[in-house]
Amino acid sequence: MMMATNADIHTLAAPYALHALPDEDVELFEEHLAECSACAAEVEEIRETAARLGAAAAVSPPARMKDDVLRRIEQVRPLPPEVTDSGDDDRDTLRSGARRRAWRRWWGPIATGAVAALLAGIVVLGIQLNETREQLDRSQAIGAQMRELVTAPDMQVVQAEQGDSGGTVIMARSVDTAVLMVHGMEPAPAEHTYQLWFIDDDGARSAGLLGDTEDGRIGPFTAHGLADADHLGITVEPAGGSERPTTDPVMLIELA
Amino acid sequence: MPTLRPVGDEGGAEHQADTTATLGDLLERSARGDTAAFARIYDQVAGPVLGIATRVLRDRSQAEEVAQDVLVEVWRSASRYSTARGSAMAWIMTIAHRRAVDRVRREQAATDREFRMAAQAESPPYDQVAEQVEMSFEREQARRCLESLTELQRESVTLAYYDGYTYREVAELLKAPLGTVKTRLRDGLIRLRDCMGLGR
Image (cartoon, rainbow over all chains, first blue to last red; front, side, top):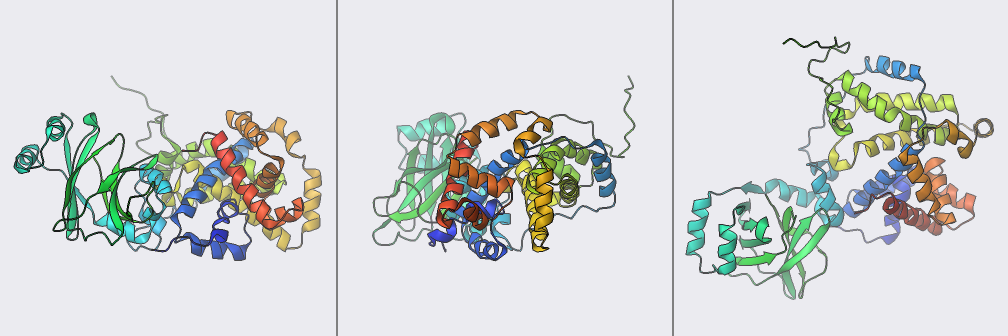
């Protein structure tokens, strides 16, 4: 996936958002924008700020203006909604709400096309509680923490499948903990590791480094600090991990 | 017990005008052809839309033309608004600002510099307009936040946004290098964002 490498073009986000780019630069920047979700987030943020400046300049419109406008719209048919399955615009693909927008801002690469496709491919399923308890009882990894988690009144199981890989998360916000198991994972590249992230409106927080894969499996991996996270994400990071995600997620799981 | 209902002149069946509907909700209804919902949008945004058009264009009658076009455009393309693109207000104000700026640039291209200067001379500058404008929390906040910027930041933001100049023109006007203007613009906007409590 391409990320912005040209620092200079990146600085055009502010003038672009304010319509202060000459036409020839607009095209140039829009090409870049299509591949730079960090820029898209910045443009969006600036426009929120600018809207406040604009609203601060509000004047009282003459009364007849309302009549004129209402009369004019009688003659205008509203456009039909855009049907978005053609992938014509990455930014349109991820349109399921403000929360998603909030973490996209912090995790730039998420808004790229490949990841949008990945998101679409993820199916989240709930599993019957009893079934899960049985599964867990069979697991050798149950410790006291796990029991606390599993018996928590708000325990939930979230499962995500994507092609041959997938993950299961057992979580309870009351104990601030999520346990993750994944399967179908390639081993991390040499000198690299898989890192788990909690993602919420404030960004991505590291939830720890995942160990090596065994037969494509990882976990059960216990992560504390769930808080308000609405997604778990896994990225490939340089050995030792990173403070912030530096690559596109290889797996994203939407939490209940 | 029968309840009396006002006879709707817009013909919509279900607008028991709930006062809590957000601008986004109203846009959604508007996209389905609900003119009553649009009228409520109008009430919320016409002032800001006309305001920014007036700031950019100066000429009041041109500004009103642009504002009307913007509002009709909002009606027409309401279905294209998505919360993933930010707040409904920002979406509408972006359309308004772009239309106003386009108009200015077209005027310029049409060699109407003289006309524009005349229009500017006729229109009172910002501070004198202030009396006529709606007093609002936004206004006070924006003023306070703009004041918190450095002079170069404030001038860059103001010339680009309120006056609709390109950043190259801003650089020319401020006799500052292009790179400096871009940086001041960005820094200024970040500071404004934080000052307005929009940062995360």
